[in-house]
Amino acid sequence: MPVAVGRLWCMAPTIMMNSPLDIHRLQGTADLLPAESFRWTQAEQVIRGTMLRFGFGEIRFPVLEPTELFARGTGASTDIVQKEMYTLTDRGGRSLTLRPEGTPSVVRAYLEENLGSQRPVWKLFYLGPMFRAERPQKGRYRQFHQFGAEMIGAASPESDVELIALGHTILRDLGMNAVRLHLNSIGSPDARRAHNEKLLAFLEQPDVFQKIDEDCRRRVQTNPLRVFDCKNEECVRILRHAPTIDQFLTAEDQEHFARVRHGLETLGIAYDLDPRMVRGLDYYTRTTFEFKTNLLGAQDTVCGGGRYDLLVETFGGPATPAVGFASGIERILAAVGESDVAPVALPRLDVFVCGLGDNARGLTAAILSRLRGLGLSADTDFLGRGLKAQMKEANRLAARLALIVGDDEIARGRFALRQMDGGGQSEIPADPSQWDKGLFVGVNA
Ligand code: ATP
Ligand code: MG
Image (tube, rainbow, N blue to C red; front, side, top):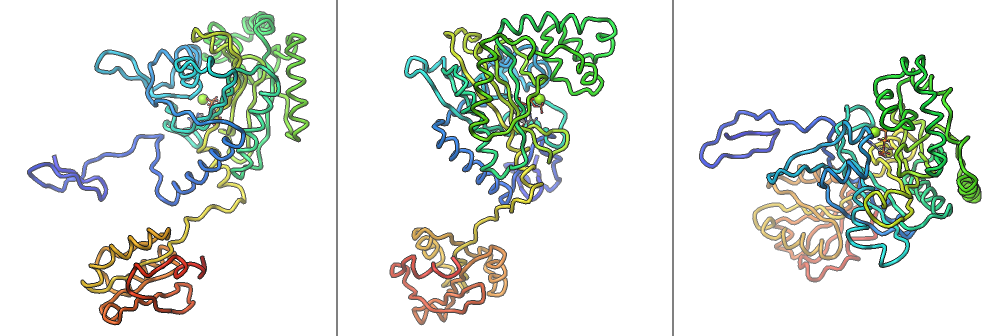
């Protein structure tokens, strides 16, 4: 069936018709056009640059992984695993999932590549698309993008501080000044056990249990600590009276947390203590943190992380402490767009080549090739239009220079070089092999 999708034509082998096919991108996904994708590329460069300055190396792992990886690594009781995964069955009958987050893959790679035997501490970062079947809304998409960092092998409070400082620095480098760090410690398994008992007793009181929502009732069965993750206003109100983990921290947990706080104070990173901020899985331990902004409304968390000392063991590896975070790029760019940071503009084109007439058009490919070879950006008209339309195009591309190549110029052996910002016109030799970059730079560069 021949179809048209917007202006893009796909022809069937034999017949051509013109009925448009009703194909649209999926809800919660986006097309990024050049001006927007340029903003993304700039942001990604900032992220990569800061990661490298902090000594983190990039890891790239598959977008598609065995479902089991997330069932175990993200946790069977999480919203992600319970309701948000894009899972499919491949031809061999195997269950696969589009990655909803990065940490399980990093830990899988750490074990699979036997990284622990090569050096004691690994600092890794990633950047790329994640997939969650959520209800699309502002700041919440089905394909979204995260960058994240993981430090595997270090248990010290200073490594927590390093990760928080990294997140803080990247957000600042991206132009996000209006963020606030929320900090908590959810302690070690001993503290969690003691807290869990008291929390369960609280949640199972009939007048509490009847008032919390269905999700929270399920959490009472699967993982009570996660009730603190609930965003339902009534639940949040009731949970104000629930026992919080801070009252149950062991002496070692308290010492660890005090050193994290001291490290942050030394760096001048302000924080708010928030004893209800949890990462509720068994393998999360001690420090948890989030960076929030007041520029975005409801979806206000731009970065979340914490320590997960027990995850490597959950995957059958040796006891290996770790700490990490993940951050959502869409939310950050939206917040920066709301702030007064000037948006980055696409760079100007150096030279627009106006080829006038068939002779000139025979030369433009070689001219463009020479200009680009000199390291300049160069473009031309591909529609055989007249000078006026070509100058208009040069303006649209914000070209600095227009190189005019017509029959007269070819006959004289000199091309006209016009400065687009009204700076006048000069002539250059028609033979591109005689050009150097200096002929084209310096003027409004
Ligand atoms: P939330 O409470 O907003 O659902 P989360 O706890 O599911 O967040 P994490 O899994 O910790 O989020 O992911 C880290 C960051 O990734 C979030 O703070 C957010 O910036 C971003 N993020 C998560 N889910 C989405 C999504 N569906 N669309 C856009 N960004 C997202
Ligand atoms: Mg979520």
